[in-house]
Amino acid sequence: MDEKQRVASAVAATLPDLSLEEIVDKIERPKDANNGDYAFPTFFLAKTLHKAPQMIAADLVEKIDQAGFEKVVVAGPYINFFLDKAQVGAEIIKAILADPAGYGKKDLGHGANVTIDYSSPNIAKPMGMGHLRSTMIGEAIARILEKENYTPVRIDYLGDWGTQFGKLMAAYQMWGSEEEVKKDPINTLLKYYVRINTEAEEHPEYTDAGREWFAKLEHGDKEAWRLWHWFRQISIERFRKVYDMLDVHFDSFNGEAFSAQKMDDPIQLLKDKHLLKASRGAQIVDLDAYKLTPPLIIKSNGTTTYITRDLATALYRKRMFGHAKSLYVVGAEQENYYKQLKAVLKEMGFTWWDQLEHISFGLMNLNGQKMSTRKGNVVNLEDVLNDSIKLARQQIAEKNPDLPNADEVAKQVGVGAVIFHDLKNDRRNAVNFKLEDVVKFEGETGPYVQYARARAESILRKGGVRDFSAVDLTKVGDAAWDILSFLSQYSDVVERAAVNYDPSVIAKYALELSKKFNQYYAHNRILQDDEGQTARLALVQAVSHILKDALAMLDIKAPDEM
Ligand code: ARG
Image (cartoon, rainbow, N blue to C red; front, side, top):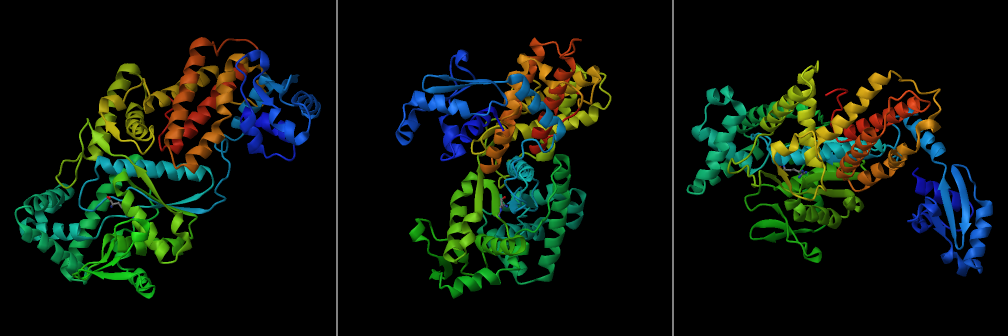
């Protein structure tokens, strides 16, 4: 509960006809500190209560419970609230220390399942920076929802089916060899893939060959399936390395191929509901009523399409998980596609169509340039992470040459820096990635937050106190109030992040808390031997807990020393 809510609850107890939200809306923050920390105006009650605002204020103030306030006084038509900051501040610290991981949670989910389809790279290509966004946004959302007691189901919907995959097989048949693939699996597959895409511009027969191979796969051809298994395995092993570096772990790798085996369901239903329409030899669904272009369900050569697989996937997920929400963390360029997907489900008569939500995000540019997998102009995520770790290692060597576990810390800082950079802005904005800006200990970066928290831990080590149960926390001092009132907003912040599926809310909060803490540290002697010292250390401990908790929600580690 933050302070505004504390004031609102005190008022609400005396005005049973109004909701807490209505009262929260009315509460103001007086510009002049002489008028208290918060004020409640009574004008709006005059009509219903048939009394002058001044009278109403005078009546209410008699009934208001003063606990947690230094004083509550009438000032004309206003009731002014002066918080008992020592008392309230002590309560905040106590609540955090009592349950660091539970602080800030509102239990919005009551355990309900939420499927999160994220990362979902395409087989036979190294994961590019583009997929970093989906992976990190998806993982952070999973962790934020977990904090609010939802049960996330993490699904990596691998792109392991479709004509692109047929193209790769065709390329392998033309130019590939088992030996070459075994030597450097993923790069070799990428090489074939890029080559066939480039050369297909002049050789349309390559595209046909790709289509044929895909049709073979759909009809259960043995050789096609052998290659499919092999290529898929190579890719998963490679992706796993990156996921391990990022500490991302999926519940399922069921991708397009898995759904391709479940096609009968949606197609039969579409037929039963007479939703399929012939169009130039193919089958489509008319979405004119939604002002959407009609999605292709079955192609003229009889093969199914990406959206048919997604329809099968959606049906399967609902049946399997009974989800309250089903999220798809995919780039903004696919917005129209998800509108189509939802519209078709609605047409099919599924009332849960609107549980599906496209969690859209902007492009990732590299040093100001666009990336494209098809043309091979893509940066390998693993390389980026390794470069970032190297840079972090150098900075640690300069700043703290004696750090004992420097390599491990460099990993946490390097990887955390890349993740934080990805999550710190509204996900719908484009991100420009430039390594030197990402791995900085100053500015709006992950290392800055990690550093603030490591500083807190270092103070605690010097202070030597870890058990604060017997400490008089009211002695923390007025200078701490800015941090304390900010800490009390944490649960609202977590709620906002969860409701909007927006990790940047947490990232911005962590930055701001770090800034406030660094300011406090610069202007106050925490380890001064006076009656407030242990209370100040308790405050430092509380800050450290919350910074660690916020970073954990973003899937970023918090080293104790760096
Ligand atoms: N593989 C796709 C891509 O790389 C993303 C898949 C998203 N999930 C889905 N169910 N369609 O763009």
